[in-house]
Amino acid sequence: LHAVSMRIEVSSFFHDKVGKDQCSNGDLDVPCDTIGYATHINRHNLSGTGLVLTANPEVTGPVHPSLGDGWYIRYLAGAPKTITLSAIQMESPERSIILAFPYPPGTTFEVKAEAAVWCRRNCVHSFQRVASLAELRCLETGDGFFYDDAKNVLYVTV
Image 1 (cartoon, rainbow, N blue to C red):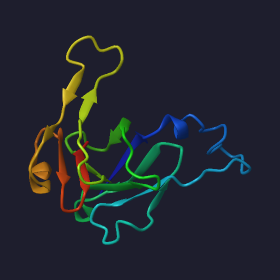
Image 2 (cartoon, rainbow, N blue to C red):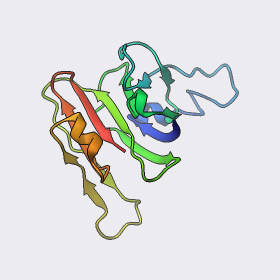
Image 3 (tube, rainbow, N blue to C red):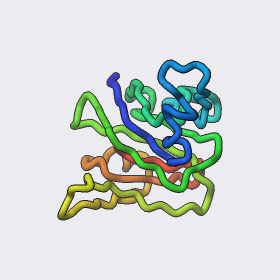
Image 4 (cartoon, helix red, strand yellow):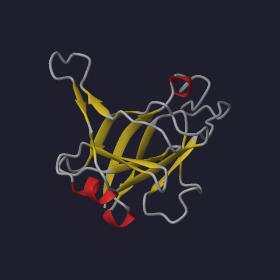
């Protein structure tokens, strides 16, 4: 069991409102609406509730191999066009986790890592598409993705 923390941003429409119109720190008159849920990948009911996701993009929680070594993240408004992960913190830099997102059939993906804005050379790295979740779990580089056509789920290593 280890802890992971990161920012998962899907829409500036939501995230730009944090501290103003949504999710104020301590002001109970400001709403903090649910925009999605995060659960462990191996949870039996992935369409149910879990850790509530709000306009505040910070997500922190446990990850364990018996629970799927990652999180299944579902947004109430449907699959986002763009997902930006940042401020990723893990107890062990040698480990990677898997994030899973439901997407409709026929969706195409471009998964990449971008370096900080001050980067001058080799600032974008494309992730490799693999043929199965088992192959994704075995990647030593931690830079892959797999789309499961049977489940309509995108799996990405972080």
